[in-house]
Length: 103
Length: 405
Image (cartoon, rainbow over all chains, first blue to last red; front, side, top):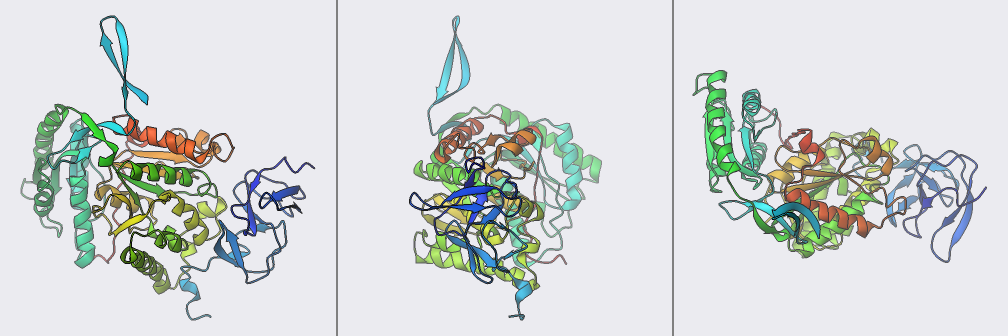
């Protein structure tokens, strides 16, 4: 399958997620470009809808998830390359009144 | 340069063009400039809103809004509501005001009217209890409004400069494209407004949580930088004191469906609206900016509450980006709504004014869309109606910061 069929974007080279600019079916092989020098082929593990994110590197549970080169949350579990990254496996770290007294 | 008017000169139709960074506005007694010439029927208490609405049905050229505020409020919450009413009346888009009260409420119509009158614009007060009930108050208010509307209609527009504009910026119903297309485009416009000597308001403190360091780094001085962290901490603490995950309310279910996973992610996209200009000031809700350039108004992320705050702070035009789509508008300020993606722009064309989705498709750059929005501000400020104005979307809501007693 051609890597040019589906458009995606990585905001900053240090990011570990990319954004799908159109719906991408599971199993699609995609070339992800970090910078002029660095790009990689990854396999999309599950269907990614327009506007949603997928991991472009292995993300270990508890580590920071980065988009725009900035922290957007932490991984709730290990996330494999090509997996959908969203509220089921990413948690925000700000405004967490529910966490007060639980840490 | 763009065309807005036609002039007949003999047999030839001559096109008159307006210069970039200029618009045709209404000069007010206090020297400020309006882009609209409304007569506002301003109910200072929820009990007077229906009467106010009746007056707008009778008298062409009047606007009003429904709300539930104005009584049994105390302290800073009282002051914030009072300031918002006064700000709505003083906004330069308003020619004159009929302030409508009940009579026994905490937010006295007379006090609001006195503050608005300091701007030099005509203000009339009508009190339902003093005028013997609903019907006679409608008649009194309508008579006063009729006179104001005719005066307003005789006022000539004059050439004004973008340096006299306060532009409010806002995003609502965001999706993952917001941070890629419409918000950066609005950021480019914000920088253009600042370069032209005008004022751009960044708001929605909640949706800057996680991006505050980027703004603090651009603060004009240490005092402003310190204030960035103060307002962010105060907003974040509100959710912490309630013992809830802020994500239960923001990002909203629609944001999450659109692909936004956390408040930080939404904030980093939202902060793009502020462009690259230095941050000159942080002002309180519904307060008028003291500085030109980029200023931050401390408001919640709630669309209508922040819109109301910015308009009460004197914004004549508001830029509103949306990924999910929204009908939002103000009774007195044109709201230019900008879609983050082409699909929604086409689905909700009756509500959306401009499309920034072309950036996602690679058809236009952020700067090109920014220029289109900038030109639209000139047209709208000179009289072109926005979709929200045409559909009479007269939203109003005050950020309450205390309980009702």
